[in-house]
Amino acid sequence: MEKQSLRKAYGEALVELGKQNPDVVALEADLGKSTMSCLFRDAFPDRYFEMGIAEQNMASTSAGLALGGKIPFYSTFAVFASGRAYDQIRCSIAIPKANVKICGSSCGLSDFGDGKTHQSIEDGNVIKTIPNMIVLNPVDAVEVKKMMKFLVGYKGPAYIRINRNDLPVYTPPEGEFHLGKMHPVTEGNDAVIFTTGALVWKSVEAAELLKKDGISVQVVNVSTLKPLLKEEALKYTAGKKAIVTAEEAVKIGGLGAGIASLIIGEVNLPFEQVGINDEFGTSAHGYEELLEKYGLGTNHIYNAVKKALKH
Image (cartoon, rainbow, N blue to C red; front, top):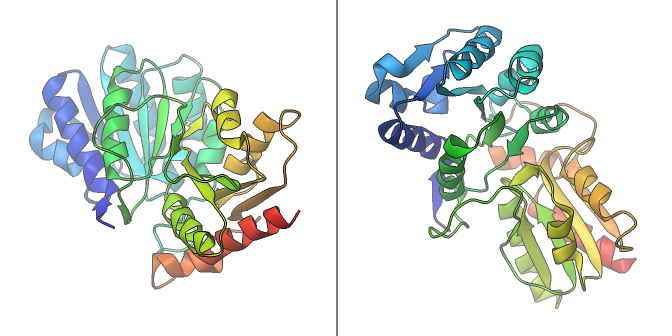
């Protein structure tokens, strides 16, 4: 399938929003060429604030700009966006419901070469626990642009995760992003895979393998990590024989735990989780090498569906 850059889509969408709304401003922590916020800097240098390697100050400054009526988008690597500035996000952005949009770029294991200090496998899980925050995890470049259009009109704090690598495009160009809505990517009756981000791609590959075995699987893209809507989850579990979740994040507090909390007491089906165990990442020569190492590959999802259906 065609692959596109989510980072480039983020930068391009930011520029388009800047053209449409003079209140849109961007802040960066010395990583503009990686996050692609540099595109906004080139288009609107007077509305771009280079904060240096000072993520806490960037979060606080963004809150101040929001209080002044601006719509700040600040970006840096996800591990720094969520970790270094946690207290400022909580106290200066989330508690007062400041209209700040946070971009956690190079999320998950996608920064494969830089190892555990730069690989953010827990950022979405952490930010989800903060009241008043919403958390988005786009599947592809098309969905990134739809989410950005939504975010500029959404009043309140938000966090969006951006993968570092080019990913296959599954989102149709028509339509708008709706918060909390889940999107079926494949159709099937035997099992459902609730998945997010890059693992949508791997789940589709697994579904294709399972089809050859006579097993029909529905892959569902869960691009809103918070809020998770019970009615959406139940819609896709109805009539199925098994449930699998697949995410490029630690299992504790992740998508699998969230889906389980929605369906408990409502659905009695075998349930399997594909995700990262209680461990950090490591450096590698390529992205897919890490997905395999941490049990997130196509065959891991394939085997999880098989195991669930055996029950």
